Image (cartoon, rainbow, N blue to C red):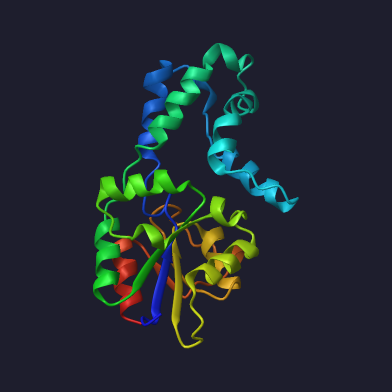
Length: 232
C-alpha cells in the first residue's frame, strides 16, 4: 500500500451509540423491566467466552438467543411472561437503528484529511455496520471494514487482532498502525498485538491504567482523539 498511516476504529460503543437500543426497551415492554435493572452486557460476556474454547458464534446470534437467560439472571421469575420471541425480533431490528456518536464523523473526516487510511474492526455483522455508516454519513469504505464473523475469531483474543493486521496488508514496518476505541479492554489488547493505541474516554470516563495499562493517546472526545492522532 502506498499510504503508510493506518488507523482502525472499533464501531459499536466507540463511533456508534447504544442509546437508541436502550431507549426502545421500556416503551415496548411497558416498563416491565424497570424493577429488574436489566443490562444486556451479558451477551458480550458469553460472546467473548465461547471463542476461548474454540467455538466462535456471531455476536448477533448470541445477542438474540441469550435474551431470556438475561432476564432470568436479572431476577425475572418467568422471563417469557415479560417478553416474547416477537419482542426479541423487534429489539434486534431496533439494534440496527443505533446512531453514530456526536463527533464521530468529524473525527473520521479529520484523520482522513490528514492522509490516513481509516479502517473499522467490529464484532457486529457487516450489513449492520455499513447501515450505521450510511445513516451517520461516516466515510469509511466498505472494503475497509473487517468483521470478527469473517475472520472467525472474536475480540478480545490476541489472534483476532493479529488476523486483522494480516487483513490490512501492512507489511512496511515503518508504517504508522493505530487502533482507536472507547473500550479499555479493546485498546489494551490491540497494544499487545503491536498496534499503537488511542483510547477515547467518551464511554467509560476512567482510563484505569492500573488494569488496562498505559495507552499511547488518551482523549476525552472523538474530535480530541483525532487532533492528537494527527499531531503525532
